[in-house]
Structures are given as structure tokens and as C-alpha cells.
Image 1 (cartoon, rainbow, N blue to C red):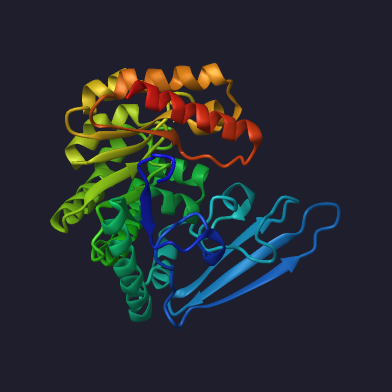
Image 2: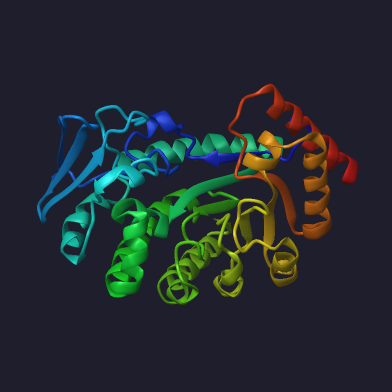
Amino acid sequence: LEMGLDSMLFIPTAPRPQRPDHPDLRGLPVRFHPKVKTKEWREPVKGDFDILHKEYSTPAGKLTTSIRLSDDWTHGEHIPFVDDFQVPRALKPLVTGPGDLAALAYLLSPPPAEDVARFTEEAHQARRFASERDVLLAGGWGVGVDMADWLCGMQELMVLTIEQPDFVTEILEMIYRWNRQRMEVVLSAPVDLFIRRAWYEGCDFLTPDFYRKAVLPGLQAEVNLAHEKGAKFGYICSSGAGPLLDCFLEAGLDVLIGVDPVQGTHTNLRAFKEKLGRRVCLWGGVSGAITVETGTEEEVRTAVRQAIDLLGPRGFILSPVDNITEDTAATWRNVKVFIDEWKART
């Protein structure tokens, strides 16, 4: 706020270390059915990285996963339930076919009363803070295909959408039912904006036809729920979104978050504005990882000018995509340049 930026407060605020079983899924804690038991063990491998195994015992059977403990593994002797980092290191994903879904249902439990009460208290404080300082109050995250990728593996899920589309549709419907229960709690805050993470829902990972058949119906239902509760709906999809613009309009999205002209495939800023500009707010416009963190001053200024010229002046939120993570002198210099050019152009 002191820098003159348009700030946002996101709830629940639990930082990554407080989410050991779902570090990449912000939001309410992920809880299992009380009868679920887990165990983890390490298998020594001579001449190679050891293997870490995890087993979930449920009333409907067991689910297992195994990962290779690469030297950059960040979770110690623990495999999170869902996580980006484990997917490329998995020797066996947790869910491999329809026979696993009955057991999976026990891992997708609704938020318990104590979590709801804790969130309600946090939401009350956040609402007061946001009102006093006139900042956007956002909540989430919703999740769909990203969750299926964590459970099934990314490459595996891409193949399954072609070879077993009915199975993928069924697991997505399970995720949507689970997500809706969590979404209703967050919307009760109330929040101004509900955000769904959909980094892996673009056409880098799915065909437009599968998206329309299996993803769009659930997305439309979530957008409608948000609108019924008085919230706008934001959708984070930073790559592969170009072929899906008609679906975004049909779904009724209010905000498309993560418009990245550098790293995002199928991302034509002019085409996005022409297609969505009258109905959907576009959020982003400049690559955080490439332009802001590694670019020159002139590259940053050029990117900011281009984003404002092509996506502005209305229906556009200028922001690095997805965020800034490198805490270096060069990055902070470029952040200042970014803000300076924005102020000069508005």
C-alpha cells in the first residue's frame, strides 16, 4: 500500500510450511476420513537414489505411491498427498485406474467443523482489515484438473484423457464435489473474488474437446455458485489458454489470471483482448520469471508499455505472471522500474 500498489488479501492465509500434505494447494486444510491410516517407509537402493513409499489404508482398500528420493527432494522422509514436486519423481502415482476411486473418496473429506470455525474467525478479521484499507479480499483456491494431475501424474493423465476419458471424467466429478464443499466455506466469508488454480487446465495438457466435455460443466457450476454468493470468479491459467477463450466466455469467468506473453503458449495479447475484453478482466501482461527477474531495464519498460497498450486501459490488472520469487538486487531494481513505468503510463 505504501508503494501505491493495488493490494490484495488472500484467505485462508496459511503459509506453505503449514500445508505439508498440500504445499501447492492454498486454502483450507486437506483432511482425510478419520478411518484413514498412513504409513511411509524408505527402501535403500544400491547405486541409485533410495525410494520412498507411502500407503493409505481406507475402509475401501489401499492406495500406494512411490517416489525416487532425488538429491533435490524438499520434503524429507515424507510424501505429500498432492504436490507439484513429487509428480516427476513418482515411480507410481497414487491413482492409476477406476478401481482406486472408492478408496480415494475417503481422502476427499469435507472440511470438519473445527476448520470451518477457524476460517470463520480469520475471515471476520480479514473482512474488517480489507474494509478499513479498501483492498480486495480474495479466497480459494478451487482446483480441478490440477488435482487430478497430482493424483494420477501429468503424463499419465494426458494419456488417460485419450484412452480412458470416462475414468478421468469420473475422477474430475469427485474432485468437483469435494471442491464445492470447500468453496462454500470460503465464499461464506464473504470474499470479493474466489480464485481457482488451473495452471494445468490449458491446452498444453488437454485437448479443447476434452475440456469442453469434462472440464467446462464443472467450471460453469463453480462460477454460478460464486456469483450466487456475491463473489467474482478468477481463473489462473497462464499457458495454453488461447484455444479455450470461447469456453471461458461460456463459463462466465470474471477474471483470467496469469496472462503471460513470454512463457505462455497460445498467448496472443491482442487476441485475448479482442475476444474477452468486453466480458473478462485480464490479469497479468508481463512475465515475472523472464522479464522482471532476468530482463534489462528497457525490456521491463517495453513489456509494461506493451501490456498496457494491448490489454488496457479498462478491464486489465497489470501484474507480473505468476509472481516474483527471486530476492536479488537485480529483481528489486526491475520491480522499481516496473512500478515507475506503470505510473508513467497511467
